[in-house]
Length: 281
Image: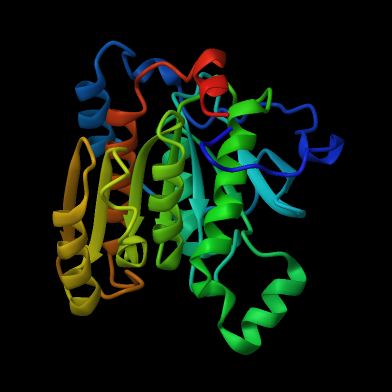
């Protein structure tokens, strides 16, 4: 369990149902002993198509006094699992995040697309736009998801990465700071990582910031955040001509390729051991 965080015990609804892995590609395409080779191949072959809908299994994650709905995909011989932190009124059905998740599945990475807000909270947020900027709330939910992934039988062997979009990126950075032994890599897409300014020096997980070249305000904020970050590896990727939502032709494909490359490079280590998870409690 992540340092300094405690959650309500998970009941049976917090466990996955028997899960049949989804084979998205032949995993032997990548040699486990050659992380740089995996990344190079990811750049070469990842071709993204819009994900047609949930593949794998729906799960319910009980954490912090609520039950969150999520879609879990675990490819056969997955090399890691990436949890998505949505922001700015988005959720697990975000077409942009499903687009990226599909590419990660093809690269041999599992994905968890979860709603960080409950249905009733989403209705409140649709009227007020307040909860999407409640970074403390989003962080608590995301830390609960990290804890769940580290314990569930379908994912506990896999190193964990976080993909954050907009305000969800701030929650990803804060969760990375709270779970240094569990969160192995972070990718931000158009993220407001500046909203996690106090935690940037504490988050050491390798961090990739992807920003549209025409999203100038967020780009400036990400440049400042990169300077403040204490990540063991950090990089800013600017997608030329892209705006905040990466709606321009080819922009989201660049996001997907960059994310797949980063996660393959930094989730190649062995999954956290039970002893490591125990040390987080």
